[in-house]
Length: 231
Image (cartoon, rainbow, N blue to C red; front, top):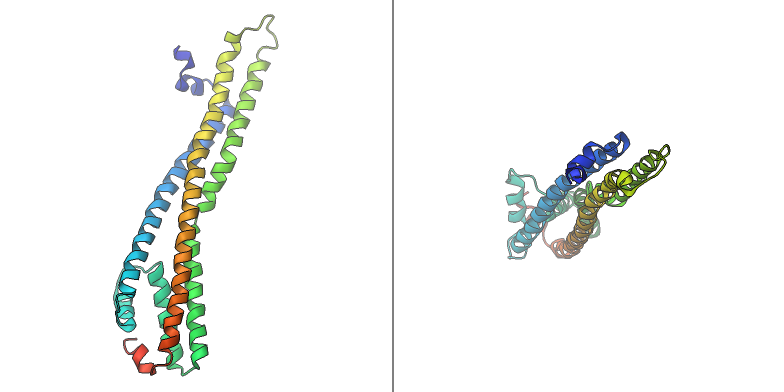
């Protein structure tokens, strides 16, 4: 019975099958590490967005909010980064005495660029999970096919083949398929969950850009010193 244990099957598998299992193990470990990192980062982004929206819509003066963010030592990301870039460009354009339309366009472009950077950060390494999810089953299948081929080749010089003779070889080959599925399934589930969460955050950022642009359009009609007093 011990000869059919997973550890025994792996230890006695052929070198190509063992190599396949090693590759799948590394892919699984890396995908789980990425899943944890990405889950933590998205959780921080959700919390940051909720906190910032609460402050932004609390009625605080925009110059005061900008000053608070600018003097903070921690790195700004998410909505904070979008707001900071947009308001800084808005103030610079106002000081340059550009027309109201040019001021708004400059601030809007700056926020779009900041949003694109945030989206890139959200999607960073996400393709790795998609690759693991789509490729791992095929890598495992390759190991299985190779193992089964080796099992049947070993029967070439045998007069009478029995199930007991090929069972260990086929079993160790099927371990590769199981390992491929174990690597692929969590990666696919995580990828779909993260993609949905990222789409929600991106929509949230883009809605904020449009809402903030509307506020800046009204600010553009006020004296320049009002919007840029704290810059």
